[in-house]
Length: 425
Image 1 (cartoon, rainbow, N blue to C red):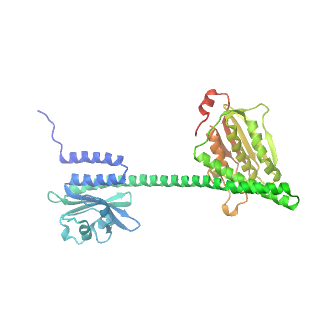
Image 2: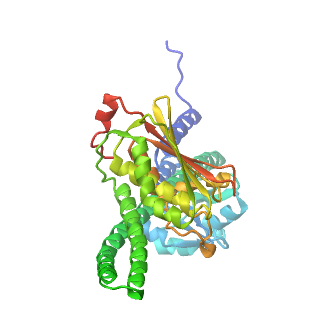
Image 3: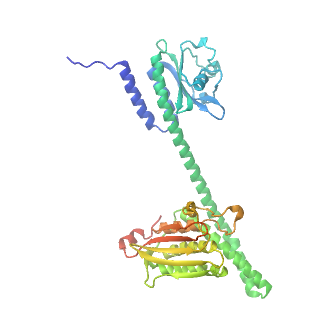
């Protein structure tokens, strides 16, 4: 004979609760989760219906998030006050309520029954909480086989505890997904604006430069001087437009690379020549610390040069007149380290990574002295990382100057060149 005994009712219920717990923890869709909870409540408690009410903090009311036997949308529009209702009493007092004849209890909120066309005879409800925070109420309605019992109340309480955690997690995931969607939409709009603005500004800027060049060539004296000022301002505006275009290209991941071996010294000298007039206007001293032996890196010079133009431009703008800009490079293992050191305003420790963020400004917008859009170093970082390099900032603090270091892969690895050639980031 077999010694095995049939599973007791308690054992079956415990096994069912464990099964429910696994399902709840693996379901992230809130609507599916709520429907599953009330379905399990009806099944386990052998009742005609179940409801799950969640707390609406803004309106200080409970509302039906899920309910069997009625239209979910219709039920969700029905608000249950905290005062003068059974569900409200459960939520406020954080205590379960079991009533096998609701007609004798004045707290029964009959408006809900009338609106949903459902006659409630017996009622059992338990609170849903996360730590010290009330989430809602789980209800079982109209026992099919007599009265609700204390054992069934404890069973519903366990289910409510599991449900509260699952609902909290699902809401959190939903909030994160919504936030990510909003961020993605904001990034899309920002990228579209950059592309549109830079495109629309090119035509009028071209006309300004053309007419100013004509006036400068055809006239002498004051008119020519004024035309030169217009050309200088237009050149600054063109630099802003080019920066906006570069940022859009980086964000769109539409950059094609032509990688080859190039001397870092040639890149640095070319970049500095573009910015030399700005340094001379500010009476700054340029110091080279470059070895005579060419340091070859794997890069696309048409992308690496603008990166260093932005880095040097940043150093010049944030260094007072009469300061010093040092440009250097050295081989370190399998990389070449190039740097731009300035004697400018320096950086606080929390700014060393933030300066590479889009539109970040070291100075407050209300007291700006140094200008710029706050995207130069963002573009430099994007270009350098697309080329397989790294960029970082160092500073001993405000007033102590800044060093921007760039690490690029040393040329000579054919496999590296092949893997990066015509790379789409």
